[in-house]
Amino acid sequence: MSGGSAPPEDADDQLEERALPAEVLEEVPDWDDEYLDRVSDRLLHSYDLEKDVRAGRERFEMYGELRVESSKHLFHPSVQYANHHMREFLYADRRDRVSVADLERLVELGHELADDRVEPNDQHRATEFTFVLVVPDIPDDVRAFVEGFTDRTLLKFGFYGHYEIHCCVVAPDTTDVVSSARTEVDSAFALWEPLEEPRRGLFGRLSGLLSR
Image 1 (cartoon, rainbow, N blue to C red):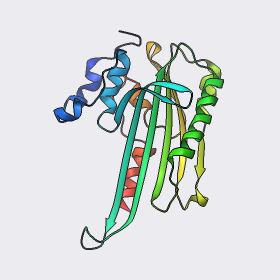
Image 2: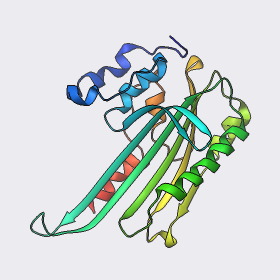
Image 3: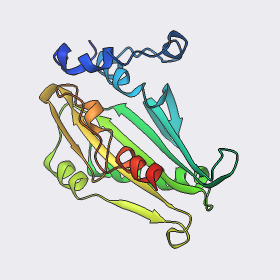
Image 4: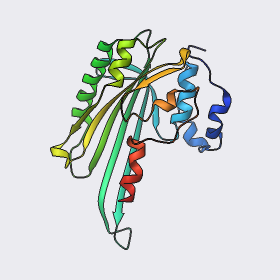
């Protein structure tokens, strides 16, 4: 094992009941890091996953993309209106240490990625960029920064939706995790805990989007 504590196997028993087709599982990368490999088992049901990607000047061991599209129709599916789409880009990496400056640099990267990837229009609902760092321990100043962090940018006063940046730091060896407000993916990285029901982040807002 490359690092991180292995959680009890029963924490992920529910995943065994959600088997995906073999052709889908074949597309999921294998990570040399056992911890990240276990995390991918929790994410593969929602995210398209890749390994060893670069974004700007940063390298990440894990990359995930979540895409959600919704539409309403009148009487017949061919007559559609209120089409919306939401996306989340996940970047995760194991580091020897983490500082507030490291997180601030990732936030800047998030804004750069938004300039390239967000397409503001009346069909765009939300784009989210989530950065996760896996470290041996979480310094107090880093914890304070993440707990107080929030960064949402409205596009055309919200008429074209918004994009949002999230931060999460996890120390699996000490079963510790801290995440910014509305971060959904932190529970997937807390392998020592069973997966939680979605909160009011991207996943939690989907039901509201689809029911309107």
